[in-house]
Length: 193
Image (cartoon, rainbow, N blue to C red; front, side, top):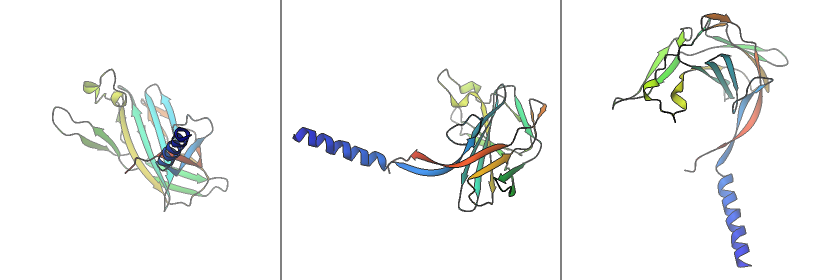
């Protein structure tokens, strides 16, 4: 009887500790047939050219993180730095401008890493910048990854449409269909402090 009670108390204590290690956040998740990552959208525009979009509401608007992932020998260039947000279903609109793209160079041979910035409309090129430090077990550094941010001053709509600017993918003009997102809650793990 004492062993069963001790087991139940241990399970209860473990449950309380694990439950306190999670937090519920709001994010925008792709709605429709886009491939959804944890939240947001992942678009494969060509072989070796992907764009990942993450969005979350904040106190004064909606924050966006745009990540361009390029394999060696590929490129992407946005025609404009403007992103358009449409609130659904009533159609209210807002425009935001992307920041410069940043690329994080990993340090080598005792030298620290550094960031390189590219204007939002520059041609981003996959050059295999980390090929010399990639091993068979390396996952993250196999492609060049550029990140940019934007913020919309908007209320907290439950459904939105995001329109990316026209772009050139590997030198060819491409227009991406508008993407629809829905506001949803997501539980994340938070490390104990």
